[in-house]
Picture (tube, each protein chain N blue to C red):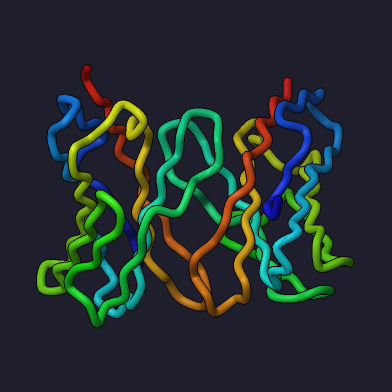
Length: 111
Length: 113
């Protein structure tokens, strides 16, 4: 079946360090993946997406890596800042037009 | 400003009452979605709508109903048949159903006692 999971529920990093948030997916036919950031009590915000014909995509301070061989997705945040503290979700395009969301990783940035 | 609005931010109801959550968007998006989020969990799809006057059940539609009479509006009714209605409800939209980047509203936290 389709499922998206995360390796770590909570990630704590020092301000200024790089953060890596991981995500595993099970549907090898998935062709689109997306990362969202959700701050407490708010709706998710789009961060970056990637299609399966790419291995890497970069945005502002963020990079998404896709390893189709092991069905693994990661979000890298460079020079993590206090404002990056949030829950991060990965999602994959499931059957029909649905996005399948993982349970999220909480990122805590230590000053 | 273009965006998605949900109201109210917090909603309290007694068990056995139906309640309707509002979702409005001025992004001119065709597709709209409703998700439910429980503490420490991801988002689960309740209903979605590709265009006006059309909507489809998501993964957890039981106990919920929707309408899509206008492009801008996609209200969700939580009925008394929903066994565990207390949750954070999120509305989203996308330019069309085939474009997967969805934009989310701020959410409504519903508490039923």
